[in-house]
Length: 287
Length: 267
Image (cartoon, rainbow over all chains, first blue to last red):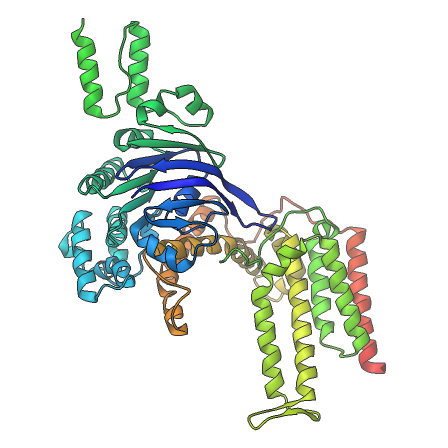
């Protein structure tokens, strides 16, 4: 699905002393089947922006088109309800939304809400739990008995069970150990690549993740979209990023220093470990 | 949808009411509520309403903001009024239908109760709106001190209240977040029968409880880690200061109380 933001603005608690502009005049197009990352410091409006995409918030000004849906401030909740199935949302610390007696039933909650029969919903739940790597022996356990990482996976399965076409991830790896972070990101990447209809929007503070998986990166600051482009484009503007309180991936910093110290031409837009290694090997080979 | 709850919120400001000593504010509120139930004389009610309006203006809270926040409470007050309309059977009948009869006593009684509730709510919320939770607890603790000699755990009580107040906004935020997360999974809070809508809140309440227990534990650990061991021997960083304006305010409310007693006894 193509996602298009048309001069979108959002304000929290309008008409109160706590009024706060969260998003101002955002214009951007996300083509179908793209992996998009949104980066920016805390409070830059990333989370607000992605919540607008699946209709949890409505724009105060402007409009958004998500596939066949158009969202303006006049859009009815009933329409948004349908949109939320197409655009699944994994919140920060999604394990906080677990509530059912068993994991299986918790994952089946979403599909049942959207009119699947209990049997169908259970089938979907089993499939998605398998995708997220939860073993069958845990299906009948209470979600509150699981470890933190397992709870996170079960909660993610609960969103995947809606079979969305767009998956919105709001810092999905926060609070996990490094291995857990990598596993979960790989899982999302596989989910994305296994179907040409699927898109991912990732909100993250992790520049490595943004660089390694994205087709496109949006940089936000103070509720405005500052600039966007491919990881190569975005991370080549190192100075601007620093001003916004952001950084570039470790591999880029290493390669650019290597280039500067040795005084030789070197490609620094290498974001995956293997590509970085290859670059260094070829650098050494020139000696 | 939870943006409009103003109970327990504090709005920073520099108004006269903001600057008052919390003890004075609490005393005034106490006087106001107690004596409101003493008299039913119209002149006294006019005085009570004027005091409310005066306090409200002095507090400088934006009216529109307040109006939004009081909506839910207005619903409860209207309900009380309607209940009185049908239940109280005093005075001459006003309206007779085959199903029910409304008496004039019901109308006046209902109006009295509704009016009292309304101004009490306005006054009470003005205190939390203009006083930081820390000040409020300090004030309460000081006021309750005499009861400490009788074995009442005043510090603990005040502290519990402070924590409760402190966490109202946090809980609301958390609730809003969980509601969003469940809405993203197709939960529907706005459609269907009343029973369905009530049931729809189960997926919100359970995570909310789980989180609250966890948070309570974390808070207890964090407090102990910083050496908290109850109120005994605990000193205060901020000392409350009683100013002339506080004396003036308490006097004003005492006069109001005296007037209430006067109208009750002599008019």
